[in-house]
Image (cartoon, rainbow over the protein chains, first blue to last red):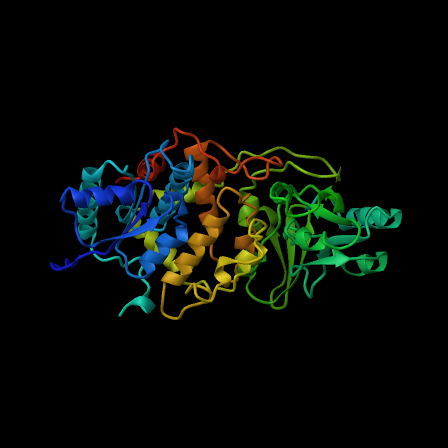
Length: 145
Length: 334
């Protein structure tokens, strides 16, 4: 496989307003570094993330998608993240079944107090996706410049 | 051969029409050939006698049609094969039609033949197919009559039939069967055991044939939204894109996901696909995963059951673990 030395992935991170989004804020306040390739999209709850959002992100050029939500049991809306967990288990399993690299998708539970975990997760995820290279299997030629 | 005959169904339908129990009958209408049977509404004895058929090609699942038909006046008679009754229950669970307006007659089913398999065997020019015991007699233009073993030409979903048991009916013709221990997940397991590259190549090959006719969506008894997400012209996947493979993948992933946990595995999607894409393999993947992750669940087995995707337990698997666990049960050499 050809490896592009200068490849910088585009990562879309869906972050729950009540935890991970604040966690990202905390990471910033604490001057913790995480790659600029991560583009955060704030959602009211991780269960707001529709499977269409994830596929749409890939369509528009994302190389990896990560969903961050509150730890199970800590959902601001009591049970939203439990539904996320079931949905994403099935969706990711389906993507894997279609032969799309499983390392491109991830769900991580990050609380508002875990700025360090947020930065570490993002660093690790970006590294993982960089190693995979460009998203070829779910790209949309119509969206390429 | 089917254990119930056309005459028996016709007699039952006429009896119920005459008694005034129902004012319409949902049945299979004769087409140009024996094998192109169309679902239709009959409202009189004359219509029934003229066009009603029941043969080895009456695969259509009538459950979904009830949503539109129960909007009319009076009761409608519907014939349900065992697998159709699961969809019937699932639609009732979702409050999609009025049970009071339906008179459901359960009929036993011995599997339906697949004309595609027959045509693959005998070539073009099939003018008729008759059933004689466990043999199919195929009338052809060029080769005369060809005798085939019926069991070998059943539709895929019938060869791996999951149930001969009716889970909903007002009246039963013939005898009720049992839930069958079926091998329907074998093909999914085979795919799971492949490497990601092989799987990608397999699906690329299958899905690239899709012409986006939306027949799979339209026929699916679980796909009953008034407004469909694929009807949105801004979605980028509302119709077939030229020279692009994303659109069909997106469509098929989302179509299967939207019925996950509600799909009864009736197999209608694969039956109607004009491009012969094995769509049931996507639906069965979700069913297999749900069974493995959250315990066995058969959609439509009972009215009012809670679908796995609108339910949760505190100890559910994490998505990462769940995907990794597929390797273990599939026995993939990772």
